[in-house]
Length: 467
Image 1 (cartoon, rainbow, N blue to C red):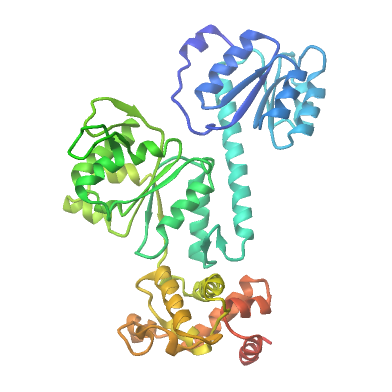
Image 2 (cartoon, one colour; image 1 turned 90 degrees about the vertical axis):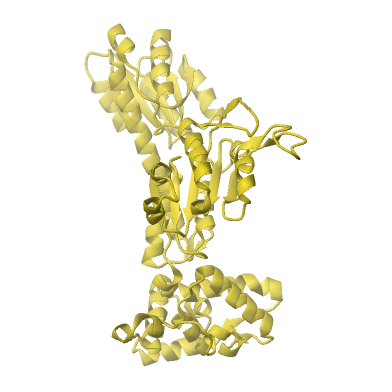
């Protein structure tokens, strides 16, 4: 590496390697210092070791993700060190550095498990690109592992329930969003579970041990939103008898979830935008600015693009929040999840009401035909009311709210018009068969999740010629 290259190298701070631990193993101080400079600029947490023995001690005490290993070490050879490193940390990626005239030793190292190699002399730009590639590779490994773990669940993603194709797509987006710290805009109707999605993003990511602070922008009094978000100093206004830390500062290192962001007054939108852009806040009544390190997740059931066009929402804030965009499907768009959701809620309510309950055939048909304007929250409340009103083990249509008994609810037939009428029997058939398929043919589990008896299930399957 040359001094000219070193002086010219000044890349921007990257997020790709953030929170990854790297060990530089080299007996030459100048090499360690240069490699440390490049790695730290990329966001790595860097440690150094002068020998193989020092490296082993670090591996025992630290969660190491990447090792930059000089193959020509005093004492133990580089290939022997590589073998012992992979024994201790199989998931760690090792990049070998060789100063030999040939790359034969580096090729052998890659056969023994090294990720890649770089030959001396190398430029800082070469090292930068290599470390960026390693970071990207590790992020992809983590993402794929998270996706495999989540997809193993029969119900959904974490505490989110549902296996409809629309939900599987959402789970993949959540897993990807969890691996970054970019702002995310979560869109969905009331009751679809926007806060649950926000929590899944936070608690599935590397900041899960940091605070998660939810803020309901729609319920806060407009005159108090600023002091709640940014905090205030003593004497800032009448009643401010002592200083108070704001929610943005309380979430340091973690996540702030701004629910119903569309309800935020325009003047506060400008202050929030400034805080996100400059990563600093100023408490009410103070002239001192405080640096913050928080991730912003926002949600709304409003059409923000229309609000921007009408001038009620700032265009620049919209684009700042809309770096990643997740849309939660309405319950009527994933009706096949209704039986699974119903079984999930009834299982959870069994402890509250000290009795297990299932849904009768007619009750299930009614749930499947309903439009659910209140989405999953309405379904949960509906079943909770039914459990409270019913003293028997089976919930019937009569136990459901008035919307299911000639009230003002809307059925699928009424909502979609005669051109799209779907007979309830056909909807029931698809729901049963799809559930069995999702459960890999487990009919007993399907019957339980659907809330019907196994005898009823086998009778239905015989009618469908699927017995």
